[in-house]
Every structure is written in structure tokens, then in C-alpha cells.
Length: 122
View 1 (spheres, rainbow, N blue to C red):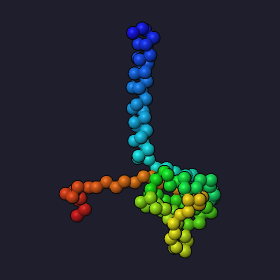
View 2: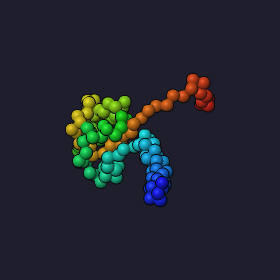
View 3: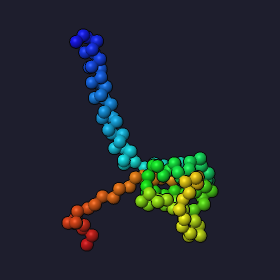
View 4: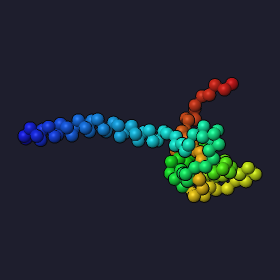
């Protein structure tokens, strides 16, 4: 082996040691993160429009809350089903083309507690 080959292999090995842990940690971050459209401060400043649609939002989580264009109801996402609760109390499924001025979603996976798990509620 010549020196160039040895340097190249050393460089390749060094880079793999640097980037593999970084890439692995990003996967963990995606699994335990919240995706947010806008901020609650924008709602406080009466910014009730947006440029993000629910079809895109649904790719970022299966559980969350939000609102609709011009505050036309509240959004609740449970088990990947997105619902709009209108001010009248009527519940309907979200259309993927509806606009999101504010929302927070995550991929929620419940954890099971062992049956003998003790709680000290008494």
C-alpha cells in the first residue's frame, strides 16, 4: 500500500467516526420531537392566516393540537386522525388542503407500564 491509500483510508475511517454518531442521534431526535407550525405568540398578535396545509402537517405527527384559517375551530389529532371542532361543537374530519396558522404535533407512542407497577396515590 502506498501512502496516499493509507491517508485516504485513515481519512475515511476518521470521518465515519465523526458522522455516524451524529446521524444516529438525529434519528433519535426525530422520534422524540414536536413539530410546530408558527408560535403561540403569532396567535396572540392576531396572525390567523398561514401558508402550511394539513396534508403536509400530517406527515410530521399523529397526535397534537392546532387551529384553522381565521381561527375557524380547533384541531385535535389522535391516533393519526385529524379533526376540526367548530365553534358550534360540530366535529368533522380535516381536509388535507385546509390551512394551518398554528399547530403542534408529534408521533406519540404510548408506553406500557408493567401490571405490577405501584402508584402511591393513596
